[in-house]
Amino acid sequence: MSTPNASGWKPGTPVTGHNAMSGPDTATGNRALMLEEPLLFEIGHVETTGVDLPEPQGGANRLGQLALACVHQEYPNKISHVLNDDGDARPPRELTPAFFGCYDWHSSVHGHWLLARLTRLYPEAPSAELARAALARSLTRANIVEEVRYLQAPGRSGFERPYGVAWLLQLGAELREWDDPDARRWQAALAPLESAAALQIKEWLPKLTHPIRVGEHSQTAFAFGLILDWARVAGDSEMAELLETRVTDYYVEDRRCPLSYEPSGHDFLSPCLAEADLMRRVIPPDLF
Image (cartoon, rainbow, N blue to C red; front, side):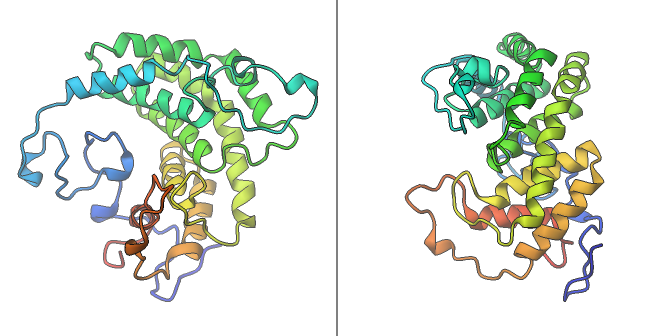
């Protein structure tokens, strides 16, 4: 049961206004950036941005080609997993047959998300048909059965947690929001892996005593934003309430995030900006 914090706001209270996730699609394709306020990179909303940008069809195709070039390229490959016996010494295409390309598992997952996102937004792009074929090849029930088996094997409770798991759930959210018969079939195939990934997070969050504030894959703020998006799209109220409560515990009293410390030599995510982007999903605008 969530309780009000010092400000009187209670986790789980619906967020409305410019912090709510009701904004228009943006060129980034990231729900985290769908705000009803001026964004210089927003497409087709000159009335709010003051900038009239063309639809990035060429950019969409270029990004699609990048994902297409790697989602089924098996090598080079960085496998990071616990071997339980000789049977685990197998090639990536056998260990994780849906997501074995793009050098590592999480990159393959967000490569598939990119293909789904671009094809949903730009169905006439030159890469759209190839993207559909790639998604159809990967997101089969047989492949996902093996992915679930891999994820649930002994010693893998923390596999790709939180970054890769967050992108897997974001892929599920993208497919759920895509009104397309192929997307519905792919989402149905992916659903068992979604459930296994969500359970991994639900079992971990009560044990996580502090947030992880680095600028790399283990950062919690960026991942929690993607997972919260999925929970709301998928209607998983248990996950949404758990995340909102834990996020409040971790971050709501933070002040003056030290942006002058960023970036560190290994950062590819900003800890401060990711936290701000997470919290605008969770707390009301007047407190944000």
